[in-house]
Amino acid sequence: MPLNVILLIIAWIILIPTLIIYNIKYLIYRAIKKFVKPALENKGLTYINYKWCGFFSHGSFKDDPIEITFISSKYGNSSNSIYADVYYDDNKSQKSITIRIDTVFGFVKRIAYSDDSFKAL
Image 1: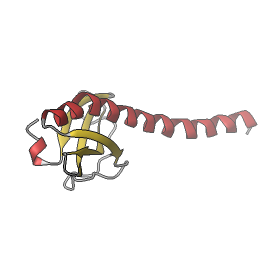
Image 2: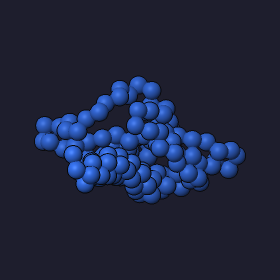
Image 3: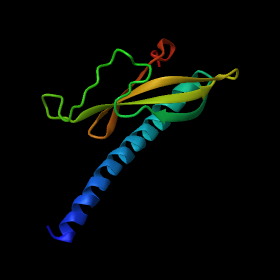
């Protein structure tokens, strides 16, 4: 094989996972900015930081099955769930909660919280 083809294959192997991880981090950032921060502020809590749980971890959502899907609805929408641990301050100590961000074609569809006190938000 020519050297150009090998270099092109190596570039794609590096580029695709990098773009996927960047997209996940961007979706988490948008969900936190649009939904989680206002929900925490309504409860009088202060947002500190977040940590992405990874591809195969669900954080505090222990009952969720691990699914790898690309097309999951009858209309062909690509959906995915992203899990992140959100750290916040309640004026006494630092606490964390896991959020599940349900996305459809790169748009945030729904946010679910692992703590029952946040589910009403």
